[in-house]
Image (cartoon, rainbow, N blue to C red):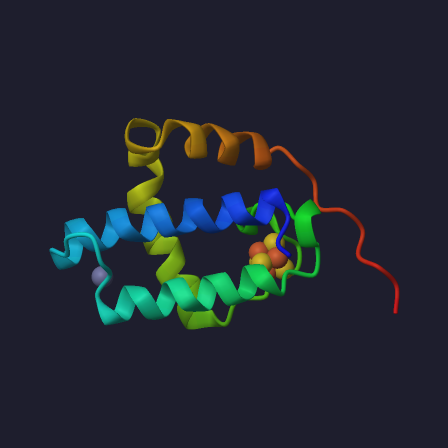
Length: 110
Ligand code: SF4
Ligand SMILES: [Zn+2]
């Protein structure tokens, strides 16, 4: 089962991708195939995040588990949706700012 933190982060990323897709790809209530693929990729990364519920925000992560292309794509989405989030999703935006202050915990030794 996902922690509350990861569940919230999934909601935040989905809200940002929706915002971006609606404004750039003229979708209403659903995602275009490209953005849906990105959503799926990001959510799989979150599900497998090595930090679990104690993760930092991905932008401040020392590991950066994303492949180069989706990393570039999500940066474009965040740059667009980030400044618009406080108006559209104030709770998620505030929580993301607070999460951004967290430091990444040490990784477990193998
Ligand atoms: S980038 Fe870092 S914080 Fe984000 S999912 Fe990957 S390992 Fe976790
Ligand atoms: Zn789209």
